[in-house]
Length: 385
Ligand SMILES: Cc1ncc(COP(=O)(O)O)c(C=O)c1O
Image 1 (tube, rainbow, N blue to C red):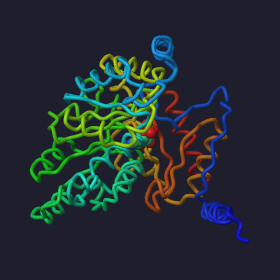
Image 2 (image 1 turned 180 degrees about the vertical axis):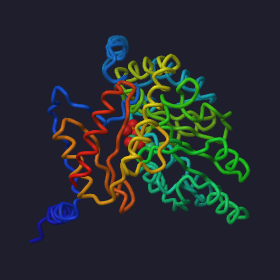
Image 3 (image 1 turned 60 degrees about the vertical axis):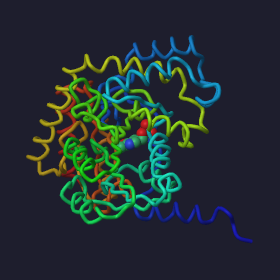
């Protein structure tokens, strides 16, 4: 008789052999731990106002939403946060989801649905887009034409090549890339999408809170076209969890009718949305924190370059230290942990083969002294590898 678990254990053995096994980090937090492994870019996750707002929303609306938005789960809190996001993003409407992953999977799958579009769409995607965007495409059975990372010349050439194809065209891109910390020129990208009649879907997971004059994301710097859909999360700079899309009223109505991950899932908890709305309302007042965060990231990159470290094309609060080999990368992470510094080791398939890296997520809560300690320890660790 075959063992129904054998293939799973073989897979784990192969991952272990290749230095790619994922294990959960320990939960103990040494008192002097310096944490660069998170996405709490503005240091909001532990702000008392957010915790109080969650409790207040809970006492008004309950701990859980009790059902899908279309059944029992729609509250004035859900509608209030959506109205606020739509206004601040310069969109007609918005829709919230329990996670960013769910938002991408649900919305992209619905927007690419070939029974709706009448044909399989031509999907042009940055080759380093997040896994949740790939999932949306896979759910729709839509093949992706991947263009070179951030390369709008390459994208334009592909759009030219397919311009006479009558199929609907869709472009998918993050705005700030989560593993590389580089960013797309949103104005140029939207102009290209408009020129070629393509729907544009932007993922602002890592830009929300950090970029834009008021912290509402890179798309805040452009006038959103009705054919642009902007997704974002509450889980990174806002310090909470959940996702949203800002879009036209038409697209919102369509998603409410066709996005399975919206229709067949319990509405986000009022506890979470209470905290998320509180964090969102704080964003315009955090200009100094954003400027300090980005300036410190720039100084860190300069110092690391003088140390001969490869920080890729990062221009944001996310700074990779590209070491290449997965085993060296996990060894570096573990040695830093022994020195009281927590960073993430990111390996394939999350990043391309040969580009394993330490990922440093900076926060406005870090101090100059924290960064000095990081640089010094990193220098020691890399020399010892
Ligand atoms: C670019 C990008 N999009 C979407 C997500 C998913 O967001 P969430 O963590 O809120 O599910 C992530 C999270 O890692 C991300 O980096």
